[in-house]
Image (tube, rainbow, N blue to C red; front, side, top):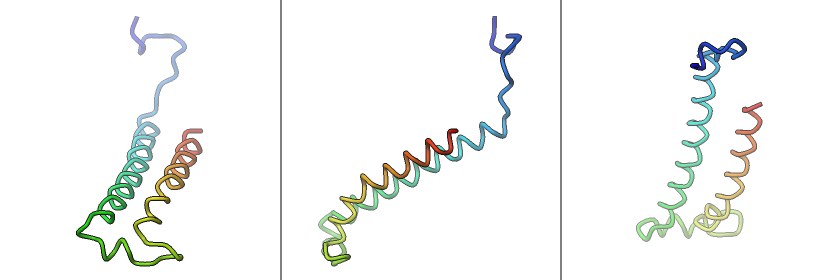
Length: 83
């Protein structure tokens, strides 16, 4: 028996599913571009930018250390939006 013919299967609203897809891919895109940007700043061609002091440490180090808190914040947002 297919899922559409089940008597007690609630219908999935298309608008709700589309919104969830946009939120999930949006969160992924935010993390991806932050991670990619942090990696590019660490390359030898961006050495001047990576060694620029920000908050008392080089920008490259700050971005490297910020990857984990950013990912944790995005996971919290993901769980919050999934409710």
